[in-house]
Length: 195
Image (cartoon, rainbow, N blue to C red; front, side):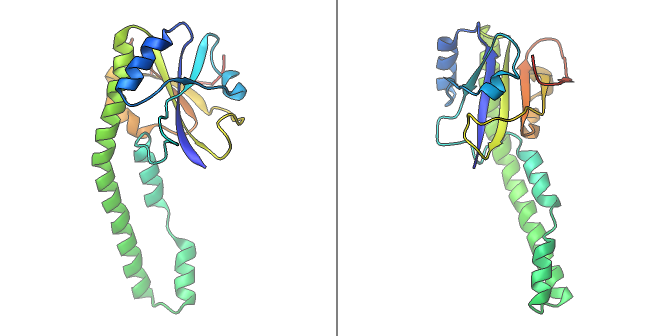
């Protein structure tokens, strides 16, 4: 279906003021009901949709990982079809080379786009953290094949000091992992999801 980016914040945070920050950064903080996710959050946390449009397909969050996955996939089934059509091995090799170059070109173009858009996300997250309205903000990038209210298990929860990690960390967000960004002492640890 689609990628969506959701956020987790302490329920004690002033959501009205944080929503103003979100609006300035072309995002929103709309309360989101998903019993499955809520059961996996810590006590005293709230869950929000950040998407302003229809979805977050094409997001640059996690782009580096998705680009690497695309590059590593060899089109084996296509090669079989080309052989069945009578293509020579030399012609197939040229086709594979052209395909690899196209993926590399797309990746190079994506790196610039990735850096610029993730800088926007970084500014948004830092503005929330610098406001003093929340000690942390969680982001969850997820590919939904069902409605946003559908059940799923978080793969894990990772705590990251955003200042130390820098904007680059946003290019490597993995689908289904809740990233808890803070400005505090560096605590890069992986926790099992849940209360």
